[in-house]
Length: 289
Image (cartoon, rainbow, N blue to C red):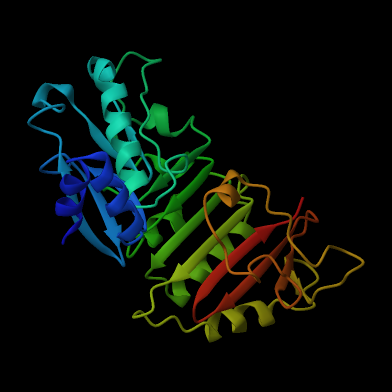
């Protein structure tokens, strides 16, 4: 049975609910799809399955819902009265499909008494954290302090050029050596002064030749009148980067992500130090305090 059928079956009786819970598969995520049919959906192995359609009952057109964050839904103030019903359904689906509801939340946003969406720069520039599935065109997220993009693809170029926040994680990125070199040079020229960390995980189907990035870094070794590159010196910095971003509570990183023993240290003329970690699978940049 598909997820929708299992959901409806679980609603027939308490005994049937327990039976479904005890025998159903675990899903990866539960979220709301508001692009077309306005429904709760579950994600299993990268595939999306509809579970429960909201439009007929709780989501009339004028309520202006918005699928904004990966694990959250922003509500227009006019929809607040429906909030508890939506939350109840959400928690029920999480319970049935064995997904932690405290990590996947439906939230209302009413302080500003106006609808918040992807085209609201004022909102996105002032939040501490956003977790987006994809990046819309002309996104105002370039100043969001802590940001995760799940499906960055070609938009990685926008963040290389324009990101002004502190910590960013890009997944499924279509990174190339030219963009990585440009990012490094921009930091050397003091064009990324707010940055603390930049982490991009490469799409497995896209080729990222890190050799030219390594060549650029090696060419800066022993420089005297400009930024220079050094190997790790335990007298000058720690081996592990202290990653204290809120992102650490929302994302599981590979075990060696913040181990900078074999990274390339860039030391600017002003004494500021950053470490570059580069491989065919990732590009990471950490700025030391």
